[in-house]
Length: 152
Image 1 (cartoon, one colour):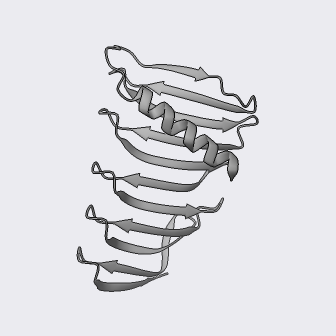
Image 2 (cartoon, one colour; image 1 turned 30 degrees about the vertical axis):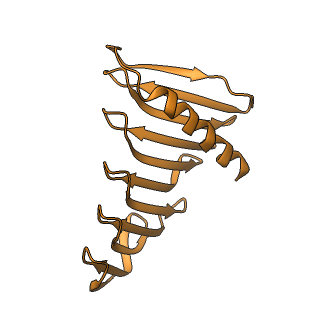
């Protein structure tokens, strides 16, 4: 966990330096050395020269942290992968608020919460093997429950 926090700090620092890059005309990828030889940092640029994706992985690539950017350089998704499977994901609205949070195990089973762009919950429930299942609560944009679904 400490390593992930350190990686997030490093990513935040790099984001502040890299997201304003302009003037490039083609996509490119670069690998940046870190103080920790066990960590690899890969920066991918889009056709407009702005950062499109930053990935940091451990030495055997069994765990990676990914940050995706839109064409304006704004973060729209972050994710944590373990052994090639996405175990945590957050997607964002353009205003920076979370659109959805998911926590999965290796079989894409886990809890999810989705939000309105005003920051209030839109729905919450559970996924099992790529399918919505169990009790799903749905809210209006004022945070009031408007519907509860039970899915099989």
